[in-house]
Length: 367
Ligand code: THG
Image (spheres, rainbow, N blue to C red):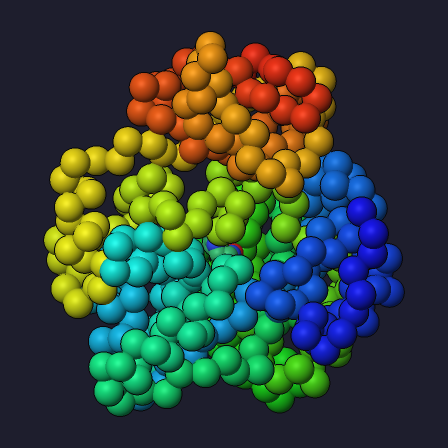
C-alpha cells in the first residue's frame, strides 16, 4: 500500500513525538487520529506485551464528556446497560445503540461524578449522535470533546512500573475502577483497564502539554523492566476476544449478535433509545453471533475485508479479524456465524486470500 499523507484532519496526539522516537513502523487512523499498529513487528510486539510492559498511545480513544444535571439521564439514553448501580469511580463497558438496536459504538463509560461522565469511544463519530440527542431532547447538559488523551500501560510488569511513577497506592485500584493521582501538580484519572488481557492501567491525560513529560517519565522509570512503546496488538486482542468496532461489528449488528448481551439489562434500562427494538430482538434471540474461530494451516495475513465462512457451497458467516498465534500454534480469528453453524467444534471452511482453509468454530476465545 502507498503511504498516507499527513494533514490537520489526520490528528497527531500529545504522544506522537515519543511514538516516532520509539521507531513506530505503521499507523492506522482511528477517530481521525493516528493510532500506532506496529513497533518492532506484530509478533515481536506480541511476545513483549505478554512478558514485560508497554506504553501505548491510545489518545485516539477520544472522550465524549457529558457535564450538567442531565448527564446521567443522557448516558442512560445511550445504552441498554442499567447504570443505576454505577458509582462515581467506576468504569463500565457499555454498548451504545441507535433506535433500531444497532451498535453505534462500544466505549468505556467513566463516571467522574453524578453530573460528569466521559465516554471513551471506539472508532465512530459518536459525539454527533450524543449532541443531537442532548439538543433534540432539550437536556440540561454540555457535550464536547475535552483535551483528554488516554495512555495505556499494559503487560505483566505494568503495576510495578506504575507504582514507581504514581506511588504504591496505584496498586489498590481495582479492575474497571479509577482513582485520582498526581503528576507534576496535575490530578489525573487512572483506571485499571485497557485493550489487552495482560493487565494494566489507563491514564486519562488531561492537558496535552503533560503528554510528553509523562511519556518520558514512564520510559525512564521502566528502563530495567524493558519497557517499550507498544500498541493494541492484533494477535493478543483476537486471542482475548476483544472486539474492534468497524471491523468485527457495525451499526448493522445488535449487542446480542456481538456477544455483548451480558452488558445489556434491556428490561431495566429505562430511557434507553434502543430499548423497544432490543426487547424485541432479545426475546427472539439473535440468528447470527460473534464466535472464536481457529483457521487451520500456515499463517494467514491480516484481514482487510471480510472472508466468507462456508459450509459446503453455502456461506454461513464472515471472518472479520484473523492472525497467526505463535502461542496457540494456529490462526486465531473472530467472525460472525449463523446459528446453524455456531455450536462449539463445528467444522467449516474459510475462504482466505491464500485459499480455502479448514476451520473450527469454538466455544470460547483463547485468553
Ligand atoms: N479503553 C478505553 N477506551 C476505549 C477502549 C479501551 N475505547 C475504544 C475501545 N477500547 C472500546 N472497546 C473496548 C472493548 C473491550 C474492552 C474495552 C473497550 C474491555 N473488555 C474487557 C473484556 O471483554 O474482557 C472487560 C469488559 C468488562 O468486564 O467490563 O476491556 O480499551 N478507555
